Image (cartoon, rainbow, N blue to C red; front, side, top):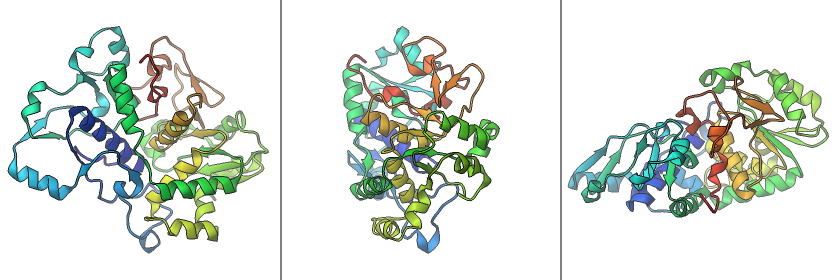
Length: 363
């Protein structure tokens, strides 16, 4: 299976999807988990300051054995390969067993996407090559019987930040004291998500002001320049605004701790940032950012009642957005049926995490 071409959270999504497919098929996953993850759209650390580039294996606990490139190349030289002719996985629904792709519940889950799955005849093939892109959250991809879904999600929840990064984030969050957090993405999203250009700094301020008390500390997670005018309305409204990257890199004690991590490049800083934001009293993120989506997931797994809050409505149209949250406008058994987002079903796979990541006893 191929690694995703995006940044840290996209690559994590592809990793989780690959682990899920390997688990369901009883096979060993081959994925370039030792390759550099690469840096985000506006790195805070580059060159010598970043040190060795982080890999997925550096940053995350991997709950299954993953075959390296060298071992996989040796297998390729000895065994035939079955190329799996699937579309990119964010456009489809993985169904196992195939007969599950029937009935009104599946139709609601699929939300217009075609079904894919393992063909029983592939069991005789020593190697399955899945060239499809793995961009998508597993909550939206895998349609399984309830018990199998719970089993799979239990495995995938074990893809977690390694302990040194968690320890630093925990201590940093404690040092910040009680705080609310916002992830505000402003660089590449202004190009890749055209709707974001309609979101003004004053809209972000007004939305956050509706859910975050002005007197409480606001921690801003962003790749944008903290000195940018985009943050002027926030600084004027909130009494205490802290930019997290600056808190880590410009505070000597925290910078020293960060430099002591196994890797301390921009990807490591992004991971620590997600871990800190997950510990906020309240959190609002940027819609259509996978970085935000991972934070929302972590908070939801810790507290099934945690809301999915966003700094602004990026969609409009038939949606209902109030107090930083999208609310149902339609009927249906799944959240993506009810929220009425006016986008293609394939886009829903990556634009946000879903409450269905918490597996209910009945589904």
